[in-house]
Image (cartoon, rainbow, N blue to C red; front, side, top):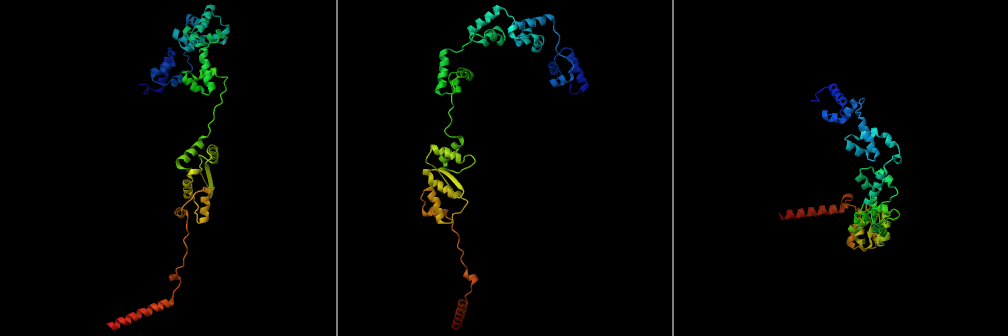
Length: 326
């Protein structure tokens, strides 16, 4: 129904409902429009209603007792903005200037020692946490026994991470960190990098590996310190990494990957010598590229007249012999 109504009528309805005392959110929900639409057409209308003097006095008294803004708003069934409006001058003054009964302060201190928690005390008494914290600033609460704290410190000192200790002892990480701030634990670095691990993985799986953007010569030198049998060969602008016992596989892969053709036994011998392997003659012939020899075709470029004459006389004699027999 509202969508079919003209915008001027909708604006008038919005303003009338806000002036009647309803909040902007209630008007938006009732008319089925957005909150920002209601806010746009009612910028000049204040929605905070004036309250009675008795309610204002009650709000101020409850806040001075130490209750939070949320608790006062829930108890008196009003909004938090209303509480803030009429207690703004109270919160401008420091908490230490607010006079509270000595009985209340004594009870706060007794409950902190009883519950061993300032947060729980504030929740049980319906007070602000910072009020409890101010009146018990000389009381240092130890939430965990001495033996538990000693166990936490001992586990971290032995080398376990704080997250691991927290999971094993069913504690939070912040709790473990709080009791181990003075312990400077040096994190152990991995022996090899992730890229070096990828290179090692490929060498183990295939027996060899070619340099690529994922791993380069730097990763080879990292692995060389851990695995002295790791080898590297570079010839004809092509490098390959392989283990010493996998040289036969590596040389075959290297020769197949070359863009350059090996045309002489001497060149092939240098490659085999670099890998320190033995290849039979069949293997050598497979990788050796032989050039085709350019032979002259004498039938096309040279004519033997004597042979041609001899062939003609032979044919004539055969024909003469056949005529005689006929």
